[in-house]
Amino acid sequence: MPATYEPAPDEIIDLARELIDLYHEDLADARIGLLMRDKAATSNGMTVLGKAKKLSADMRAYLPYDFIIWIATNEWEALSQMQRRALVDHELYHCRLKNGEPALRGHDIEEFNCIIERYGYWWPGAEGSVLATQRQFWFLRRVGSVTAANLDGVNRDVIDQIGDLFDGDAADGGEAAGGAL
Image 1 (cartoon, helix red, strand yellow):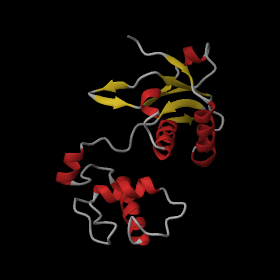
Image 2 (cartoon, one colour):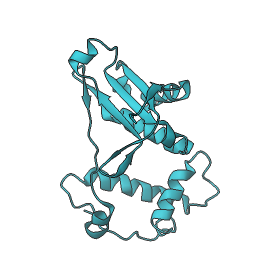
Image 3 (cartoon, one colour):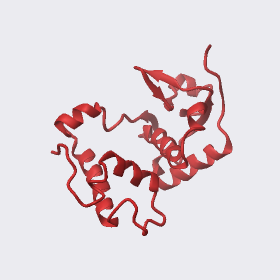
Image 4 (cartoon, one colour):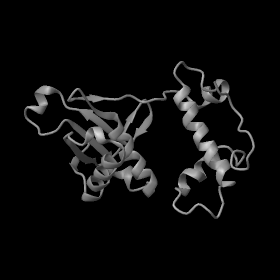
């Protein structure tokens, strides 16, 4: 049975507006339609939580949008507040206006976890990914542990995920295993 779509609820529209104001100033003039898809799609065996699409010039002549973003309702309901925020932010980051024209941005990282475990950040241009990971380690070392009492205002889900990922090694100030550039 084909998926069904409906307009996104106000909570998602408000979240998208907040994220655009905070992180996506370049999208202030973009026309973005937000939809809910009844169930997640799959691509290459992976669940697709959401998707950003650029409307072609001929479609923009008939529809008042530069981009359409859909979010899978069945997956949205299972996400934490932090995960919901990250999903909307992620899909917005795909969208950009390049010289006033809608364009899509690809992912920074496209790799298998096991390859990263074996070889680290091996690919040309991985420096940005290394820096982002180092910033997460720096934060964990700064607070001293993932259970530190001084985490007021810090997203605990992120801290817990990183602590779990490295079995607490990074949070305890130890060096994390794995490759680096």
